[in-house]
Length: 85
Image (tube, rainbow, N blue to C red; front, side, top):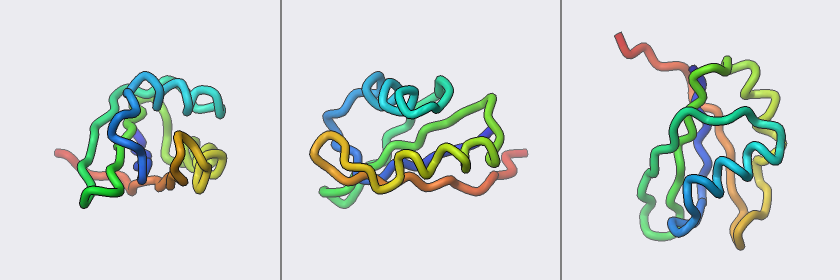
């Protein structure tokens, strides 16, 4: 499992739009998208990929990091693996 944090994503952008955006730039279908409220101006979306390794996601991350999309410059950060046991 790998997680990508997309920062500065407008709250009105739907999960489907996020998924379609990532797929357009070569990402596989995500497993889940969780919204993270920002301090008003910079909300984020945590995109979870159950069938992708962190190394695989790292290669794709640069395709969308600092990209201007939906009137905002978004950031894409790969989160370190968590032990949920």
